[in-house]
Amino acid sequence: MKVTERWLTKKPTISFEFFPARNAEGAEKLTRVIDQLAVMEPDFVSVTFGAGGSTREGSRQMIARLKNDLKLEVMAYFAGFGLGPEDIQGVLDNYLDLGVANVLVVRGDPPHGQPDFKPHPASLPHASDLLEFIRPRYPFCLGAAGYPEGHIEAESKEKDLEYLQLKVDKGADYIITNYFYDNRYYFDLVASCRQLGLKIPILPGIMPIFSIKMMENLAKLCGASISGDLRQKLASLPAGDKQALLNFGIDFAFHQCKGLLEAGAPGLHFYTMDRSPSTAGVVARLRREGLL
Ligand SMILES: Cc1cc2nc3c(=O)[nH]c(=O)nc-3n(C[C@H](O)[C@H](O)[C@H](O)COP(=O)(O)OP(=O)(O)OC[C@H]3O[C@@H](n4cnc5c(N)ncnc54)[C@H](O)[C@@H]3O)c2cc1C
Image 1 (cartoon, rainbow, N blue to C red):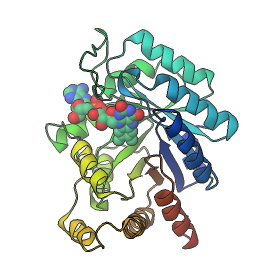
Image 2 (image 1 turned 90 degrees about the vertical axis):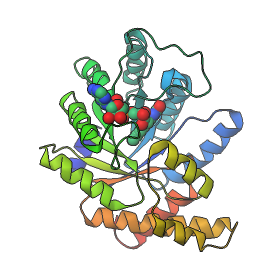
Image 3 (image 1 turned 90 degrees about the horizontal axis):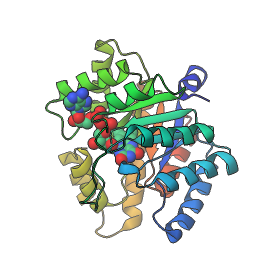
């Protein structure tokens, strides 16, 4: 089912993002994580795609398992960085064969650890170009990425918003946002989009905190700011107490989600980082408190 159809009949949705495992041990662990989260009956799950096609086979296998064995609705991501038209069509034809209805289209970044990677000479530079290429050729319900704090490379937030509008003009039916720790960034993005006349659903991305090191590293990569207040709260936790940090992360994300749902967000998209305790903890509490 197309997610936009889902939102016409059911809101709010919950959805979980997974990325393909890098080795057999990771795959075994991921199978357990997915089983633990599948029982929470997400409206859909999403599968990332490594830029340059690096996870093409892993993403394909994972989509097939999620769809065929677990009967979950899958949103496949597609990152077009460096790929030529035949490669793009090869991946998307495969998604069609697998019965995928929803595809989130992103540009992607240069693949890590592959200094010799050479983009195809006919590769497309921006997500809007990819959407323009894909829209007339495929029947997918297409999505694009949005950045509540602006994309890390963007000239300015205004320019980034212009390009987000272009992605919608070129075919995006919905937006999924990067994660953020302050809901005001999401509310501002939604307000700016509505001012521009963009009416499509804007699904907020949630990343519960469970590791300070990971939070700091990802914040630098993805541009999600960490406020002084959040830093103070984290600093007041008992040093090295992983359970205390996990509980704090669940509580913090719960309050974020509560605020988002009360403000009418169409759903909650969890960046699970291929782990189950935080996401399961937040969703269980939202359900216990009647918010989902
Ligand atoms: C929900 C979500 C899912 C993601 N999934 C994946 C994944 O599966 N695999 C992966 O590799 N990465 C993924 N990413 C990360 C994403 O690929 C990176 O953030 C990437 O740097 C930008 O992708 P984009 O689609 O937003 O790019 P674009 O929309 O192309 O924007 C990239 C930059 O270029 C600027 N820009 C956009 N259009 C133009 C234009 N026409 N002219 C000039 N400048 C322009 C923008 O302001 C921005 O700074 C995901 C991100 C999100 C939020």
